[in-house]
Image 1: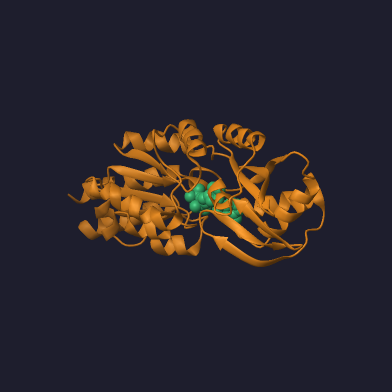
Image 2: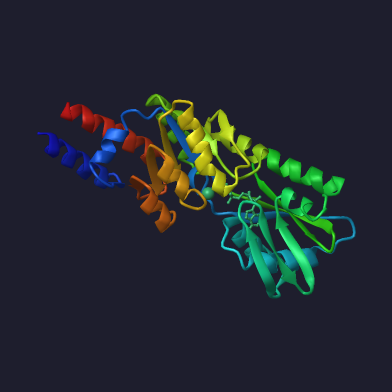
Length: 293
Ligand code: ADP
Ligand code: MG
């Protein structure tokens, strides 16, 4: 009866859009007590749009958009795609960027029309001694308090603008968090984004533990840290900057709408980008195990 119950469990999972890598995965759902959720692309849609442009005093807005947009046009990051698209819509055709470099989890830099342009976290601009003037700092904080992501833009020794991109929480995420709690799992939000943004998103979906401003290479260490506290950790991610953390978790759940690398790193794949399927997957696995016992 045992193998039959497992097959029924995996078959039922497939119908629900949950692909289980192998029957041994079911066993690991038993002990799970914590679920770590990646923010961008998992709790939120990950589809961002450029929603606000703030310039330093005397800075021409079109120039800001041309230089920042040109640089972001060379990056695949969801923030970058939003900025490049929004900049082209507002400022017309973008110039080319040279010597483009991506600093994972911080931002991008490159040369546009002879200027060394930086776009990203304030920490990136501060590496070049570029500090946001008071007005821009306030605009950034205000946007972040609403759960939006704000990045700084600078060149020629000065910070010159703040661009705000808005991502939206998936309509199903709050319901998913409730289902995790019903299963006895404590939810944790893990993100490279700013603490204020992370807390606003967490509050919107009902999560009270937030680990923010984590560089991509450190996400795996944060998962290990939770395991060192004695927790058995499930991690849900889309594979953008979190594939190693998915592999480290006791149970890795990959959003199927994410990258191929996520699907490889995960034990379970959620075919639809709906976080509720992660809770359903854990419930189904546990129920299947009970049938076997
Ligand atoms: P998450 O953990 O939410 O998926 P990332 O680790 O990919 O986020 O990025 C962390 C932060 O680094 C972003 O919120 C942003 O401030 C900055 N950043 C990363 N890449 C870029 C980029 N191409 N342009 C601007 N900012 C960026
Ligand atoms: Mg991500």
